[in-house]
Image (tube, rainbow, N blue to C red):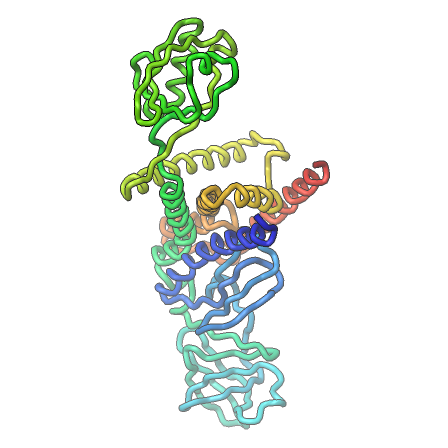
Length: 417
């Protein structure tokens, strides 16, 4: 597989995983009537952006996540106060544009001093123009222009904080849920691509081993051993072998759709060996089997991920055990080279990990925001937004420090080979 193709698959996977997570936030925020100012993939400086409707879509330099910026979550950047001189442009006696600087360049706008202003509840500006005071209504989608940049105003009913606890919680939890749904779909896809285990087969036979002396061949299907059906349980076969060291065993195998009996006596080596390498035989999965086995894979992966989180929480790890973006990219390239099914499975695993990680009650993550909403539901009033913002800011800084540390560790590991 070419380096360009591998690089494309890596970029595509990260783009899809982050995009579908942020789309979950975006979709349910829009359904609740929240003004979404920005839908961003990545952090840091903008590489590319365009605006569609009320939302600006951006691609940023650092591929370590993304965000959906909703009105009211952060303090609005532009503030206008009584006594300030501004310019306004009207359409049908309603303000559609508000200019806060570069007023000398305006040719077809009213210039005046703000006497009173409300851009959240009543939507009006009381403007003094040449000692004549007018109370002008403001359009709910009016634009504020500062230094040539437009920012849409956010009336209270379009802000995140105006919505019910349930609507806000849904817009937050939807991101991880979309990752769970994607993971489930990918795990099911892998089942249909690879099939499901149908038998235990002989992959290879060691020369001079009891298996070769008994006449076993690569490709033989093991039907039963000592009258015990094997089915797809290779661990059962291994256990039976270990229990029969230096004792004759009766194997029934299937070769070319014909069943044959083979007498094999395991050697007393390593607790019992017959000299075969085993593998599973697969068959196509039915739709219901695809759902069931996809679900089993997802449950098993979830248990494994949660176990790793528990080890992190109890400090049962070494720094060398942690991996950052560099190691993830390295391992993703290995999975892409291993085949499309392996690549899809790894993408499903990462999507599941991303969803579970974001639900951790750690500041700056979705789980922490849900905790604050839980406090609000219990107390009947929200936590002070400035305090909550500070908690999330500190948490984000800690996550960035951890990211830098594990990335440094990854680079050292690569340099050491």
